[in-house]
Length: 193
Image (tube, rainbow, N blue to C red; front, side, top):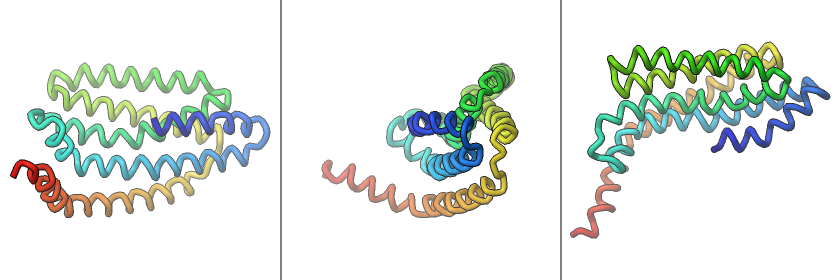
């Protein structure tokens, strides 16, 4: 929902700036990429850290789905950030490139599912999905860079800060979640006493 909502807001700006002001297009793209990174990266780390707690709370009989949720947590980053990349290509009259990249990603997913599912089951399907999101991200990133000429130094500098902060959050969640779970168990079982 969040990438779609932001995409609806930035697509008209991308289109306008592509025709009128390329420097403003570059700035808008960089800011939207960083904003979505600020949401997606902590979400990925956080989901990975508490995936077992979520499954145990919602579907305790499906313990085998914990690694699937952990693998899918990595996809948040790529799913979120494919939004401004794909939109930038479409807004800059590169729809065919965007469609081609989506097709390559889809074929990657189909081939990897064909290879991974017989050997790894649902975990293989989750891994194939994440890899196909990564492929789409890489292709769209390269094409967007050729189209918008955004600063990779600015993007990577901000990504490094966000990843570092998210990793610290991840370690904190792993450390404190035993106490949070303990408190959670007390709050759930207290009425039964």
